[in-house]
Image 1 (cartoon, rainbow, N blue to C red):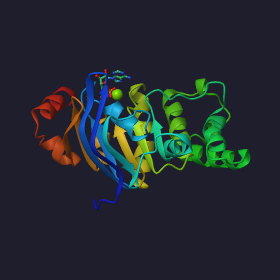
Image 2 (cartoon, rainbow, N blue to C red):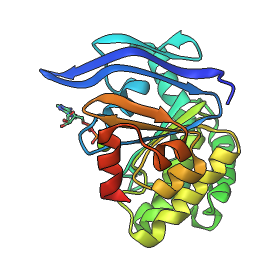
Image 3 (cartoon, rainbow, N blue to C red):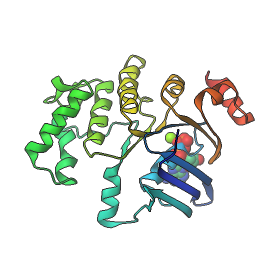
Image 4 (tube, rainbow, N blue to C red):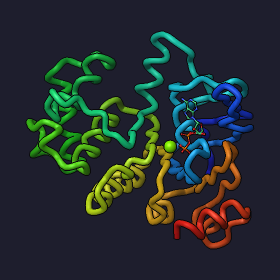
Length: 245
Ligand code: ADP
Ligand code: MG
């Protein structure tokens, strides 16, 4: 793919105290690209995601979004968090608000939309993730797969330029995984730029432009999925794949 870089990490290092969690990370995510990040537990995948929308600071290196360094604070940081949407393993919906209100809330507070305008957009997005009929329900009345689709609609409502997914299906019962992956595949096809941490290798094979394999805080391989899965180069990746495939 011709790379029009949207996110660029250069020589990024991060520590938690003495623990070196991100080591000399160089990563470019092009506009419209889907990058799947895989690797053993504790390898730094979540930390990598969290640094990209500055939920975590870094000790050295640079991260740019559309060529601009990530802002450290204030309005620009709130703007960044809206632009870089994040979907977590736990859906983090407001339990006492309806599905519609969950999707509308940040549109009103962060984007400054009028309630009616926000609700209209929310209904469109809920329709897109197959939940038009659930708008007036509360999260507890929905299945896990439905709740995660609400979380995706909520992220989309901010008009993000990129979506980060951190193990979005790991908390779901097996029969609900596909309905979430299907929504993500759809977004990928529509050209959404996505960074996806997942153990769903089928998704990685079919939807990713690149697979990034991490181990011990470093990027060990960064290649096209068919190359990575058919002929992993590093012993770490071979070992990892032999355990999960
Ligand atoms: P992954 O998502 O690949 O499982 P993480 O990014 O969550 O890995 O964690 C990378 C390493 O950083 C792990 O050793 C983890 O225990 C450690 N870690 C993660 N978050 C914190 C934190 N807030 N404070 C201290 N150590 C952390
Ligand atoms: Mg993680």
